[in-house]
Image (cartoon, rainbow, N blue to C red):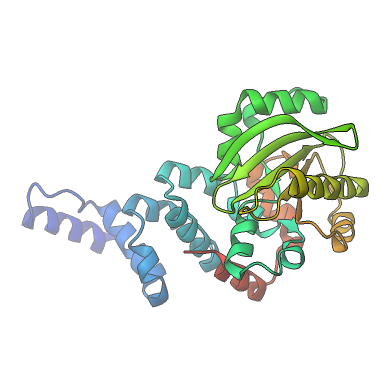
Length: 289
């Protein structure tokens, strides 16, 4: 520590008026070198984000987590404040845990597209900005999300455009209504969102499969990709979700909202569900640069 303090003093004396040579900044530079000195394959990514971004990313504990935030900050042009928010709210863990059937239902799409689709959803959504009382009805949840659509779009993660609520689909003179309908500009597809204030039930998957078939047949434009469904519940059994999605032929993701007591203890609560290091490496490679 004394060496760094003395070096900082010497640099300030040698370059009077030049900022950035405080002892704290020198320690950051040392940490930056220690973390990235052996990551030659990351050089292109490292140059795409600012120094303040790197200060946030250096807080991450693992190489895979750092790579995820580097890729995401570069891809989505996050400000360092937005990046810090995603790190604080465990976006990396919530992405890793995402339960979808995309690998099967989007198998005919390029690998890059499947990677983009997985990035478009996450395992748990933070709806703290709604300040909803407990318990609450599905209608109240829907109204609260629509009233704060800008915050909801931010939580969805980018590239989403809101089309409408209670979106009407008519089939054989019968009306059906989707809770929320979005369009993802990057995926060029419709995304149907169904909201549930209770625990996930297997029949939700069948209903969403029906909605997606109707959207693809009656709403999707010829140049657009197949519609994707997102079911957001208050809680879920991961095993029941896995069995539900196993033989569904439409791309569906199942997530929860505000499921964990605090986001800070999220990793401890879900550690046993995290993929292996080998699987994490594969998933990171799917993220388009």
